[in-house]
Image (cartoon, rainbow, N blue to C red; front, side):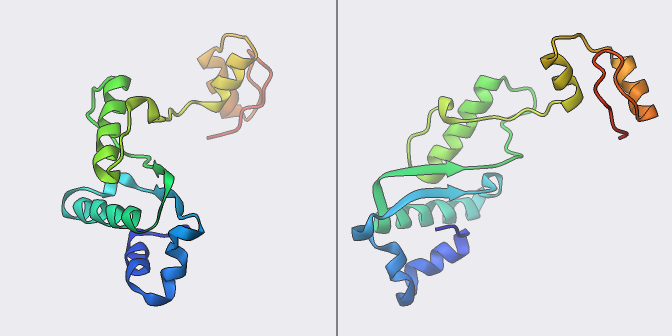
Length: 149
């Protein structure tokens, strides 16, 4: 089942939706909430309580909890370890399930051209890449085509 928190609330109260919440049929195996950074304050408390009601009503024994957010940050100068610990603590409070920092997956953005050049095993001359990008040509270090932009 893929839904949002408003529809999940409705699933709990509408008689015609009870078949989706049948523990005897295996129960809810995955609980996924996107945009975790939006669940704070009163709305965060409401969603946390909804999650607990859903779990009580229809969770399978080994329910897998997943939360995603592209913009969740602990603090500007935090180390990777402290960022992961802060996100894990937040997820633990929201889901009512233990999370460790090792459960948090972070992303980093990387310049694709530089990554390709690094994979080619060659040092990248930033100037050569910029000049090639302006001309819409190839990087002098690797010969890879570099697009404009």
